[in-house]
Length: 251
Image 1 (cartoon, one colour):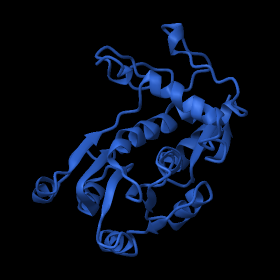
Image 2 (image 1 turned 30 degrees about the vertical axis):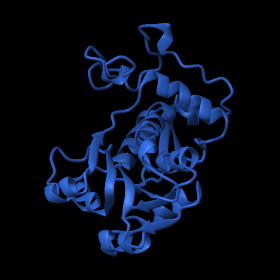
Image 3 (image 1 turned 90 degrees about the vertical axis):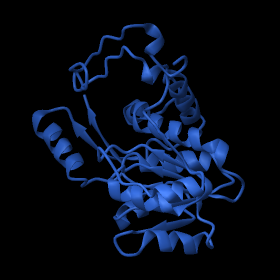
Image 4 (image 1 turned 120 degrees about the vertical axis):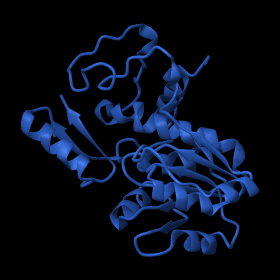
């Protein structure tokens, strides 16, 4: 597992394995896990770069070797992760066509203000497989980044892939899914999981943010104060998917 720090067999994930997700100070086990963010104009807005920004960066890095010039990349789910994913696609795969899918028009509009979207699909109003086939002139997409992870999204968007396409599973909204096995085998589709990113990836994310390759400030749609009322409001907002982009809590 050399280099894959996020997959270490002995790990202590904050708020999952150990408490302390909302505490003011954290004890870091080794100084190498402290990442220098000097040069970032808004340290508060930069916080999600260590989670959503990192995870989506890793996803785009994984699909990059498979995507050729003028091929299509589809990002499914335009919430807090999607707002970063579309930017990484444009930054790391400038030669590719960016397609997006979400059931909320306002989410599509939000990410459209961050980068140029080549085409968008709202599966609440149209058959996404048919729509994507028409957009790609029957070719299908070369890569899907699924930031939702529901059985419905996996079963649906696997069928939008072209031959030798790749499917990056990021979202964790279901425990199991039914997949179109014959389609995957006959087209030699690759499916892989993406779990956050490595320490090396994190340093790369900050480096790219310094260069302006990702607008981490515009992704933040609201900032909450660190008091009981606003923290509870923030959690309810996230649970109800009432916000766009990312929200943060300010100490």
